[in-house]
Length: 415
Image (cartoon, rainbow, N blue to C red; front, side, top):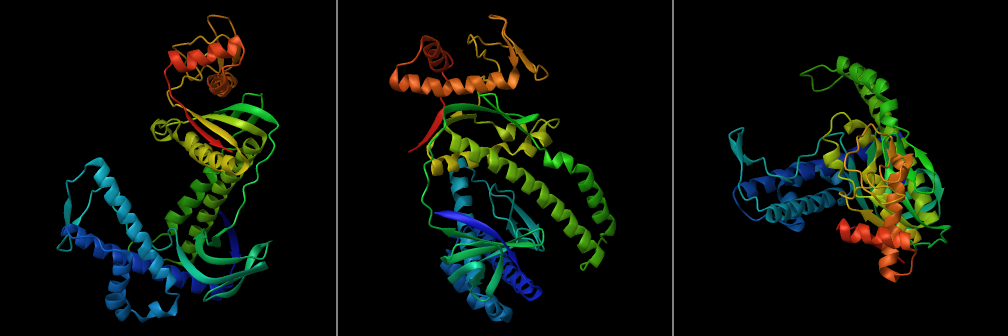
């Protein structure tokens, strides 16, 4: 299966109806969460989604009649999501062995808090979405959705019949996502293997000499974002529930800029990962510790702006589509400290040294290109171990990487 996410072109009436669905889904989720928290605090069993729905019909729906103005699928799916969240929470508590409960008094009621993974309450305007199911038809640039009727899409797609969908909002734009049948297309690769070194200055340096620039969308939009954030802050009136229209406009402009930054980053990563998945049979990348790297406050913004984790996620699922293999080099593999020419290791290598100067063979090479060559040698090493029929130089690298370093690497093969 493959998921599609397409922008909707809703009129004012449809937007209001979509917001009503989001509000009902959010209301059901928050009330269900409050009920589950109360049971959890009293050390009672967390109810299932079916039990939660029965409780919702007996208590909440009886009080709020506007639940019946929207599709029943929206609150039902919200409670299913709540059940899934609590299952993940309990699984996390069991795996970590963390059984100590923390309580705090809120409005005279004892509630649990401080537990890792405990579901949070949803806020209005943050990740608004709702679920619909039924007979969903698509004809060109139109889609028929239950309760809404025919809605215009921003692009035309093939005629399909979909069983369910999720409608979500990002920066005042509405999107619909659903799954379609998909048969992976195994492409003929032009090259056997490539090593990819991710960086800040250049997003990716390939072992064949290609360089993909880092667009740095957040850095380029930083001044504009700062100006818009100050404007939103000035127009916000503390203690007022309903803010002014100018405040809402400024907030929408700020969200639109953030969305543009995210879209530029996603577009760049999609183009790079698609090229790698279609062109090379084996791709070797480092399994970077993004969380640990981002603790360096001098480089955290630049590291997160590159989207390294998203790069790895996209590459793995696209390799599954187009065939081939992905090797994730262990995060302790010294790709930058090894000489790609003779294999010697340089113990001390500063981040400011942009050229690798080997003390053994006097090789001078670009630091990122040298790292990509070492990563590419991992693909050669795995081939040596599998077939044992390579040159003496490649065998030397295989022996050094596996025996001397003793570092295990993760490999995903898709046929």
